[in-house]
Length: 130
Image (tube, rainbow, N blue to C red; front, side, top):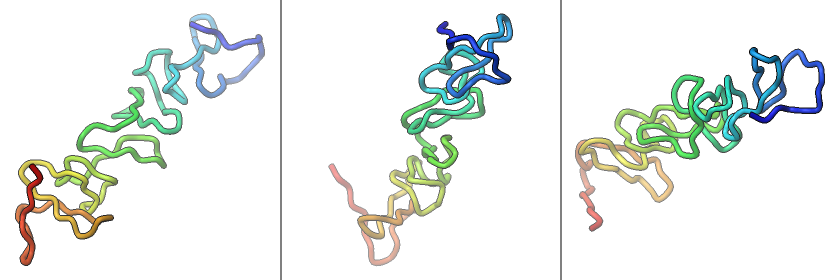
């Protein structure tokens, strides 16, 4: 464990570090953590910019959220996609990138919004890329 130096009297540890209660020193967090409870990568309370906390804290910071979640830049956390989406841009039902189950991705334009539907709407047809 690397200690933060030089010695100083602090009421709390600075960013990217945590207080070791056993010997009362500030120690560095894992490089992915902005705040943490310990030095391991799964002990993050919050993440450095560009990474997302998955699940309740403390937990691990990820560069990409898993399927069913999207990276929310405001909170720095992985948040749930709409249930119809396998992957998404954000939590809205019209923000799907890919669909869960056997749903069909309905592209309204090149830039969205994109919905997942059980079948194609009238005047549209399924298109499969092989």
